[in-house]
Length: 356
Image (tube, rainbow, N blue to C red; front, side, top):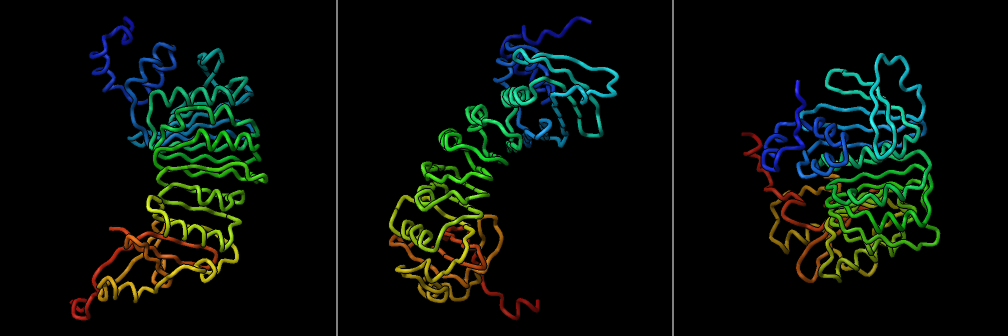
């Protein structure tokens, strides 16, 4: 049979043809040559997620397509990964030879590959994948010790709507500086630099994505806190003090253009009275009387949209009339700025309606 020479099509015909190509075919075509890769960039397809794991002994890429089909791609620097393979195939990527065995398990396509430099070829594969796919979520999990600069300099990280980036070993101030300089997710970012301490406090984080989640925030100080420009913030395992949160609330009261709408902050030895020191705060009954909301029920939702007892907290009123709720329970401080969807305000159900 004569080869199907899609690269010789004109742009319009190629565009129409690739409408019917699936995500995997797009990747295979991109791996065929650098020219194919350049052309395929123009016809990207959406996928559900792309997870990248740099593990101690191998690298693993997990992909889920929009139709729930999955790909599990494992890469090792040992030929043992090809054990018992009846057949293998070989391709080259940027001068690196990759030998693979492939199998199908229900809706999951499994690839086990050998390459002398598994870390580099894994990252190169991800770069090709992001040339042809648009994942709703991109997750990086890095447990193998390495200089992560080569990953942070990858520009496509900033084209993701939802990015998770977790490093399980200590990184340097230089790498952290590069992280906060390079990483600017479009919508949300969750990151965990597990052992980073920032002892010299030389790194500010002007992150301005919609949602920011930091899983290990022991390095974060008051300056960092006040410099966050995200709408929704979740800070875990902080060393922040009551006076730091007090500064955050005062900043919200004083600044007109502050975007903060929701904050959830883990704090040790928290005290709501100290957090509100010098701030005029009201209870919910006062707010209900002022805003004529007497016969209303309030449902407060935090960063993760979990309901919390906001009516037990205290409520701040800004000069422009905006209301915010400050609440402390156990070691979690919650702060929300009232809007059309939070808190959820409904009418009190009468006894007669309940009986119906």
